[in-house]
Image (cartoon, rainbow, N blue to C red; front, side):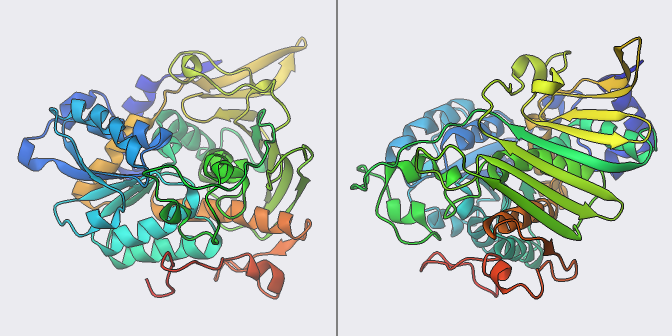
Length: 454
């Protein structure tokens, strides 16, 4: 067995130029590349300051070359979290904005970190691009196929850097896995499985009510259809079509994107998906069990979702930042790549990869492997570098859009009862299928509208 180390891979990357040609950000000494004088900092705004947004904001604020000028959130009480950002930037509190459009008029702001619920991602990205701001947007990149393309058009039209929060693309161990596959060491690949399994029980629907004091429900609801304030919609938005497409769209997209990138895939020829919400004792609309099959040239990829499997285990920090591997059969977020020379298991967000070949004496044989590390810092570093250089980032918006299309197509097929969809790669559309094209976009609510001409 050969064990690929991060140090060995980075050494090869530097010698071969992979670090430059492959868009890989290498952080040998993060502080050495972060130092910046006060007048040369990248001025940022955080838009959406909940759990993930607060985490990402603190990551950027801990850098010496970034400064947050705005803290934008429709929930006024959450502004208290800005104290954590202030502590990382010399006590300077960012300005609070209930409506992030206030920030768009400030020409001193270089970039926005967008960490809103998914139904807002495309529109917020478009508005930021139109205002001349670069964007770091958390996944998923869009709510539907059409608006994803519109956000990409805006990024290109206004020459903006847009990095999607698909951090796996900045992880050295994943670049090594991609290099390994491209070299032919895994052989010919005709089957890939993408897994998203966990325990996510259904939940009851709360009664409509008045929104809490200081919370702008109308703007939070944004492009989605009109609805009274409802705490369940606000807290469980992942499982309602109006806001998201379920766990595959919100969480499984990390594995989908990584698998597509590792295997060099773009548009599928056909897509089929079926499943159900078997745990019907609650309000959730999206499936808790789903299988999608995507046909590419000479390769079949499947997505498998199960939310009724609480014994499946998500990799913890000990795995993601340590020299251990997940127990793959019970890992919630694995990718299985079946080559003619071996089976590669890949874990997201630092979980590493291993290649298994034929057993010997009924015992597993691991031919090659590489540990990983959680890649948030590398991904953020890559964004800041691209803001300065104007080079495309590791997870450019076009890559985010192409990966989201795979999920959107699968969800359209599922919502049509498992109908097999034929995809036109030139238009990204589903020609000759009126019902499918009705789900290709959505009706937008004034004034939160994605316009055709961005």
